[in-house]
Length: 481
Ligand SMILES: Cc1cc2nc3c(=O)[nH]c(=O)nc-3n(C[C@H](O)[C@H](O)[C@H](O)COP(=O)(O)OP(=O)(O)OC[C@H]3O[C@@H](n4cnc5c(N)ncnc54)[C@H](O)[C@@H]3O)c2cc1C
Image (cartoon, rainbow, N blue to C red):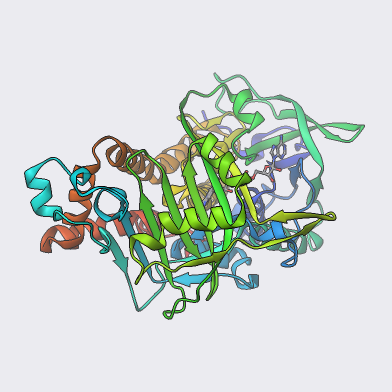
């Protein structure tokens, strides 16, 4: 039988602890604060299921300073549906940078590289006829919507800092909300997996030398790819080392005439992928997924070498379309000259059972994916929205929010529904582009050009990649109003 909140013994020290205050953790905490306001106002709810909330992050409180070279290094592409959720959470309107883009253009070395010898374009007569024997500057696949943005580019640091500001403002008006930075949970104990809810979970909150033990009704792991809660859950997972590193840098462009509103992505036969993501009228962010050794060479390359290689892999494919890179900005950090660049190892890590009694994983803690489709954070924001929807229904029905049947399992089903099509689609595209480049190019061109296939194919891709398919599954969630 399901235990209802009212049947529970003395109250836990915290109804919910959010472990991790990154982009997903801060959004989760803000959504719980709003859900509390909604459910407390409702006479039927009892109103106390979310009265004590805590967010804990091992790092420093996030801040954003546009003058700091590295606060603008990491960027995210945010879908229209994610932007709506972030807006309802109170963070979106505060951003100074949310550069809209209206077009995505995809090319492949096989069809578009001016450096590839003609003989290497394809050995198949059929593919040569369909793709054309010569190098083309035309994109293989293109998404354009001139009426409304296809997506928005933001700075991670600004979004994170603003979401924490939102959380702090809500916390100031609440009695028991606690935010702890430079702190972490240790000695986490959850009820046995055989229980549907069971006794409160326990954990020790460590801040420097100080340690305090406490109980919780639900622990939400938003700790990113290295989530320690994931280890506590002993959950099965799909793992794959891509043997790739994302080399990331900021670039200044020869100002494009269209206002710089297009994302460009070029694929290579050896599996490398480079993206130019517009950040302002004349700047862009580069995400170059390459081998770890190559990424290291790019990190150490001179300014001229780096700009030359980036232009060879982007601008030279379509000089009239892809903007020319002029420089990778440099500055002084702690007295030393530094370039606006960094590198991030890439791994697929998807938990197939992201829950246990009194614990749930969200965001990268549950599903760390390749960044080439720009979807990692978006899937995390959809997790937040789906969990909010599930929790609201559980609270209004008087169920224990740490229950695996009414919350954990239901949420896991929702998470799988929005992550699986995206992850399977991305992995298939990635494998094809690497293993069967000629066929992949032909497929992209067919989706782009063949009348019925183009309408249906592009629509299906758009439904999933823009978040529209996700939103259709959660018509009642207040974060999508
Ligand atoms: C190069 C690159 C480009 C990307 N581009 C895009 C894009 O365009 N669009 C998109 O949607 N996604 C993109 N992503 C993915 C996106 O950045 C991640 O999906 C997103 O940041 C995940 O957010 P998160 O909050 O789950 O994890 P994180 O951002 O990793 O945050 C985790 C938080 O948990 C804290 N933490 C860690 N351990 C503990 C602990 N033990 N206790 C407490 N706190 C802890 C950390 O300090 C951090 O604050 C990209 C990723 C990369 C690498």
